Length: 238
Image 1 (cartoon, one colour):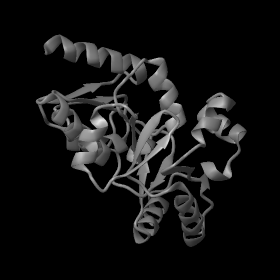
Image 2 (cartoon, rainbow, N blue to C red):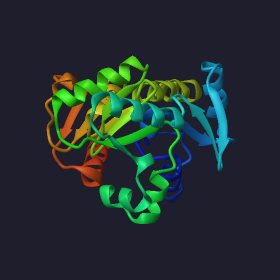
Image 3 (cartoon, helix red, strand yellow):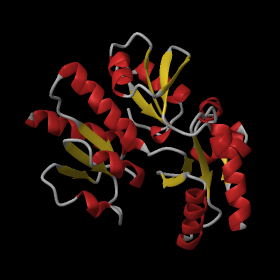
Image 4 (tube, rainbow, N blue to C red):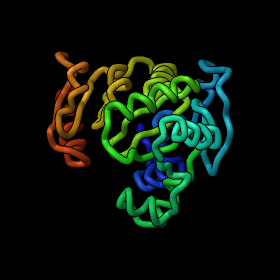
């Protein structure tokens, strides 16, 4: 899994699907894996300076700026551009539930963040987005556009985390075939790293960077249905 979800959110899905593999959460801010996972040593040997801490049953590799610093920076950026930017930290569980259409108990998990502050713009304005991007860059941070929210992050995005995991899988298994699936602009950089790329949902303006390529697949069907169809089609060809 490579997701914008938090560790508690992604960890619950990981458990329900009976997964054993590492996963990327909060848009690449962290990699989580079971403490006893043999890949942990492979990753530590390749990235010896990586910060590691334990949370619940997971070992977490921290790739991003800590959350409290992002919250402070978003307040500064909001004041600098003269526009209120509403982040999850300033919202209640009920407000996040309404904005995300999640049940309140899941919205509470969505607010337990470590490396990524989602926020909403009061209006869709390319000029305002550019100003926010510039203000974030001056602070050594970045802003990425997800499916519903903008995200203030202090790391290299999903691609850095995916590159680390691909190296870990190669160290453990040798040659592997990697398949990446995504549906929003912040997925495109990590899709460039995999052998087979899949883009789900409606075609986006920024998308042609992935094409033309015999390794790229487009499915206009969004969400789990498109994911399922794409994976079955690809597995049938391998």
